[in-house]
Amino acid sequence: MIDIAIVGGGLSGMVIAHELHHKHPNKTWELYEANSFIGGRLVNDQDSHDIDLGGAWIWPSHQPLMRDLLRSLDIESFPQPDDPSCERIICGAARIITAICDDLRGKNIFIHSPIISCKRSYNRIKSDECNEESKASTDNDLQSLSFVTLETSSGIKVQCKRVVFTIPPKILLRKIQFDPPLNLKKQNAILKSQTWMAGVTKVSLVFESGFWSVDNNGGDSNMALKPMYNSPAFQVYDGSPFNNECSVLTFFTLASLYQIPKHNDTTRNSHNEKNVKNDVNEDALLARQCARQLGRTWSSMGKPMALEKAILDYKSYYLKRWPLEPFISDNSDPKTIHPHPYPMKDLASNDWDDLLLFAGTETDLSSPGVMEGAVGSSHRVLAELEKLWNI
Image (cartoon, rainbow, N blue to C red; front, side, top):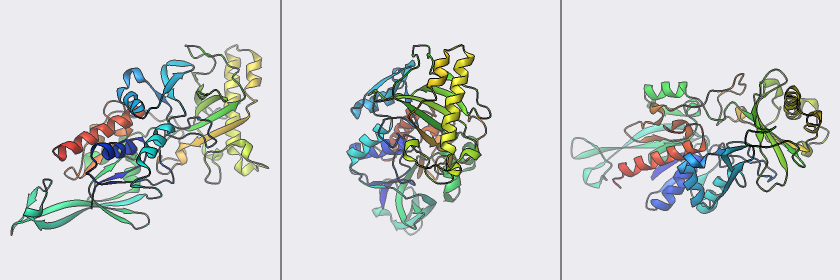
């Protein structure tokens, strides 16, 4: 039996694993990730251009946890070109996950391992064999010691003293069968919760060089847009990587259902597709719609006509359709922009007499819905574990 099972290999889960590995080497732990990759909502393009297709921004001036995490991993950030109030991470936000994975050397991390059930179990042992975590006594000098049994979709059972769930709360309730059920307050909080990135499709257009102006007020690139039919974007920013290898405009979009590809590849480069047929060309259509939408917006603002023409001359594009990620989103066809997550105490509270703990950016009580919240929730859970361990 292990001490801690971590469910979810995004930023929160990886920070917890990293801290347990270094600060509590006497505690045993394992991490279970449903997907084939580690990182959760921190994803770069697949061609190593360091383009963020998930979480991207940090605010070091008032996000001390992210600032300290990057420093501890020897990772640097750089100012967002069209908004100096925030920064992005050199080599993309996924660099954080890579650094932690390299440090852990893959120890105790299991991918392709979605958890489908979580059951409270009981083991009766002699009282003098119980450790300090045993609470309830029974007749005949026996004590009832409870633990948790997890089961993966492949039938593997994992026995652990405690579980830390770091996956989005709505996915937790939808994908995992709890026996006994989670408390009603937590279930109600989960149903009311919002999931960071779940309703967004990010589209990045890649150019040989930048042709738009950039200044402290956003210039031509950082602005809100009005989504409507054939105009799916609601925000755009300069997503160019630090190394200036290419210039990038990145859009937050609402991609309607008819644009969804009919296969599983949700991150794709247009130049890798030859003889693309109409039934699999929705990504190309979405990228084109974003370019035209921004071009029309520039024109309505009185910008030079050359800008409207130049934006159609991108050399490639990348997409990440987060609504299609089954372990991130519970709605594959969002029609409206999702509200930002907000603090909810019942999302953060423990359950099953402290056998179940909950992390993940949505559960943070200070900065939910950003990377700082993911790290903050991890620190909260780690502090709770140390208290339970009397450390």
